Amino acid sequence: MATQSQFLRFCAVGASGYAVNLAVYTVLLAAGVHYLAAAGVAFFVAAGSNYAWNRAWTFRTSSAPVLGQGARALVVSALSLGANQLFLVVLVAAGAGHLAGQAAAILLATPFSFAANKLWAFAEDSAPDGTRPAPALARRRAR
Image (cartoon, rainbow, N blue to C red; front, top):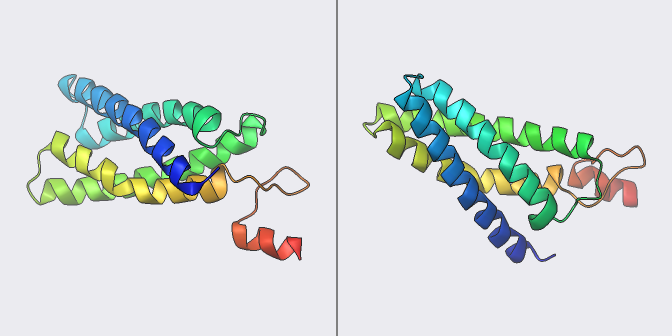
C-alpha cells in the first residue's frame, strides 16, 4: 500500500484516537487526576483503539501474530507517550492550558509515531523467527 494512502488512513485513525484521548483526559482532569497521569492513561486508552484500527485498516496486517506486533506497537506507543509528555510539560510551562497543551502535544508526536509504526511495528517483512528487524537489518539479510 502506498505510503501516502497509509499516512491518510493513519491520520484518520489518529483523529479518532485524538478524540478518545482528549475525552478521557478531560474526564480524568474533572475527576481530579494530575494532568500528567491523566495524559498517560488517556494516551494508552487511545493507543489501544488506534492499534486495532491500524492493524485492520491502515497497515492491513491482521494476519501478523498479535503478540509480537502488539508488543512492537506498545513500544512505539510508549516512546510516543514519552515525546507527548515532554511536549506537554514544555507547553504547560510556557503558559498553555492543560487541554490546549495536550492537544498540541499529540499533534507534535504524530510524525514520529507514524514512522515508527510503519517501519517497525507494522512492517511487512518478518524474519524467520517471526520478529520484525529494523529496515536496515532486513535489507542486509536479503543480500
